[in-house]
Length: 289
Image (tube, rainbow, N blue to C red; front, side):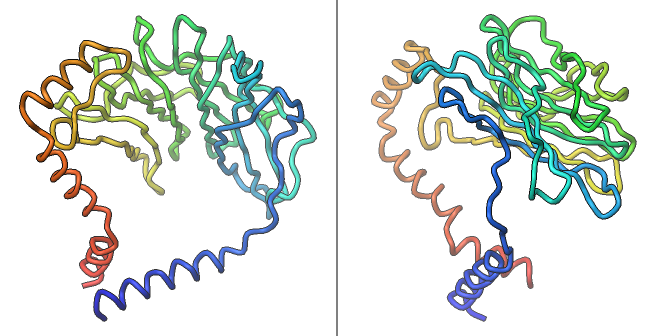
């Protein structure tokens, strides 16, 4: 099979996969009907099977707005016990923002406990918190702080997973060292306490590593963490911190002083090739050979 045929076959397989998915008509999950509120950032997990049914748990963010301004963000919970056909008649409040609780994630353990983690932003500090439910999401524990950095810092995007022994692993983006990196913590008592934070990535450059996702390898207690780590600074452009005019001026000055325009243009073109159809097909050919 040549590369053109491989590409056509791949497209056909993708189309067939979509066609075979057989999505049922969508069902609304939330019951937020106020025109001043928006529901965003859903996260989903499956609970332990009960007979022939496996509950679906969803957490999401409910924003209260005034005009275009979000004045409070709450973390809400919903569940379905019939494969997503119906949901609870009312959304369950996990955490009312003070003023903002955002970017939640959800996980369950083999005993049916449910865990929700999220960013808690008071306006003066931002931290990572965990709530636990032992009754299928009807009630929730008080928040427990996961991060241990003494000073308020830029952090967020927590993700959580439970291993076969019921231990919880949480990872998030954290800027406590000056650049964005992935940090983590473990709980061995169902979220009541959390271990000293540990940095996950070993990136030694001044670049950022962020937007982690976590997963437990089936049949083991091995935690898998994936994150973005773009190494483009000085190659396809210069990255500067937000709201730092001096750094921005320095980068612009360096760009013209070192005449980097042609180099950046060439490198951007090379970077684009990494994500071309040709490279995708070539990778599939190598895997199948």
